[in-house]
Image (cartoon, rainbow, N blue to C red; front, side, top):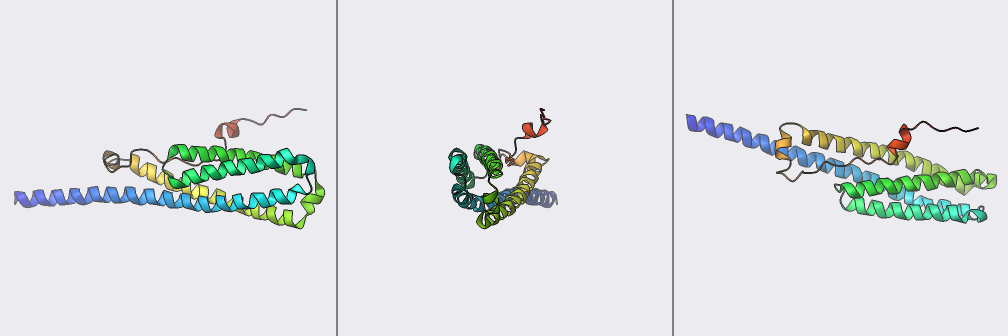
Length: 196
């Protein structure tokens, strides 16, 4: 009788440990899949940017530096995405992508400010269509990033709770997954400075 009880307890413990392992793998695969959705949207955006710059070139002959900065930032962001796509569990690659995206966002902001000085450019049908597509893509990127961050949070939370925390390292889930934040959170916390 004792042997049967011992075997039942061991079997229950074994199923429980297997369940923890399976959940860790499931959560990790979910956040990796969520990253692939970000990758799709970012690639779409990166493909639109050269078309936008090319359309603007004809109107903005004196803004060559701004246009070149946008293309350079786009290329840097693409390289960051490629590195992060190879291993979405690599915290350094995710942080590098976030940094490159911040630089790209800044360059695109400067481009938008410069475009305001060219009413003919803003009225151009190609420019309006590209701007609309870019805006739509930005919304998709934001949605995909939120879904990714939700999956990362679910994975990290499960991994850090008891009893999974006892087994996570043993099963190869040592490091926490990294959230993807494009904005500079410190800059967002600062009050805007206004001078007259």
